[in-house]
Image (cartoon, rainbow, N blue to C red; front, side, top):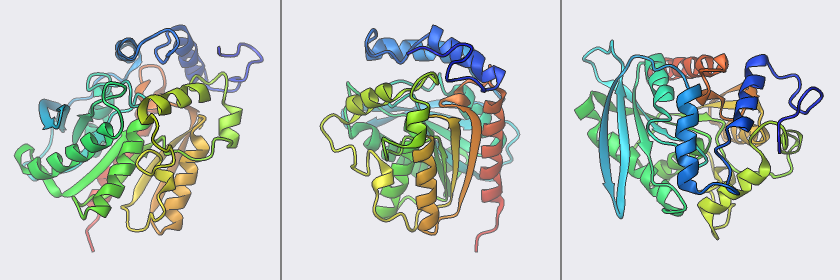
Length: 323
């Protein structure tokens, strides 16, 4: 589908988001009909190199985490003005529909989050489908959390103060890893930052219908991403759709970001409501723009604002004395 012009469905969005929509339709990367996954990955990285945030100051070091059958790329960001005291650690999971996304395409996001939060950020490039089908991404994400906890002291981190974060499909992985850590009695997670996470849910929500055309990320693309990721696995498996976890009690406080003009909006807000109903402290922020916007900070100013506000929430949480 194409973006509406004039009287089209995307009318009413701010000028920056309208500009971004035109670019997304003119320079497609999520195109399973005409592109292979490797081609989509290359196009994704090239696109976000053009429209992403300017890099914020941070010290960055790369590492590799061996896992059965391969390795997970890691990039560790440390604030430039950090003291010698151990810092909180945020394990960040890349977005890109689980199929795309790289350490490079999320470099600007992670640098901004590092600078805004004062935390060390460990970006984790889990192995992607279809070459590495489910549950490889889940297993790799949990392995990255274990690694960050075990090695935190080596890079100036505090293993007793760990958060998880992720964008889109990476937000789903952050939620799933939080559940896994609870079920497996560790590592302890203090906080979760979920940026419009693909948590699963009702495919007939108002947002799924209202924003099905003209807002770039469409239900057919979502269906393809689930199919390429989950294959024959039940999509209601909580490791794929964390909204279907039966008991959410005991998970750490959450800061949940949603985009108002996003097919996933209502699922994201339903997950936040389910966390609250389970007694979890939740802060929800809804921004009047489209899915994927935090990666579009070179065009959409709300991207930097959202990351700064999320970073401030992380800083405030870790600055609060523990009971």
